[in-house]
Image (cartoon, rainbow, N blue to C red; front, side, top):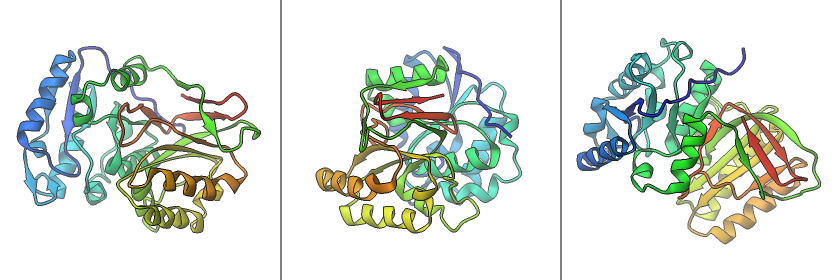
Length: 295
């Protein structure tokens, strides 16, 4: 079965905000809602966005899952925007199993801990999703971030990146489906029923607030599990980590010798500007021309 492309979000459409992981202060939710309205959208906010239980949003895992299902099933909601990352997406999966997300294809946007749901929706429901800005990111009103989201989600145009650096620009072009997201979350799927499949795919990775040894450990886990070898190519997003220089050297050391195209410096992840990437869409990595095309 091929991947399902969601309908484009029309200007002025209704966006549903969901809290699937960590909580935010209620005042911040109000400000984020106001920002979306300023951008011209109608907004509906799921109940869990106003609730918290310790380090999790909502009163329970089931509650957060029900909010997501409600937004997908509501014909008046045109797109779904995650409030924030944090932790908790893996906990709601058991409550999502009986819902047919593929029957209600609409843009689903987020990153960080939301990576778990990107992998789940891509692999289990063949639904293309969007690794892109969440509520707090949109509140920054960064023009590049906003234009990228508009280009991909509203105008439904391919992502075409130029002047992209590759570890080895002599490699031939490769194509594959884009998978991945946050490196920590990718590794947390290993050994579970929702383990990421990188076979003949383009693996995208990004990370935040980790020491070099932790990145080493995560990459080594991907290596030992065969995920790096299986991938047709790799895209390295933003690594907003404690020692950027040392991390960049480590990434090059561990990934350059894989014998496949590795693009780096992609502005997507815990960064601003933040480019929107369609997960599950077809990618072409072109080292000779220093290009990446998605979609």
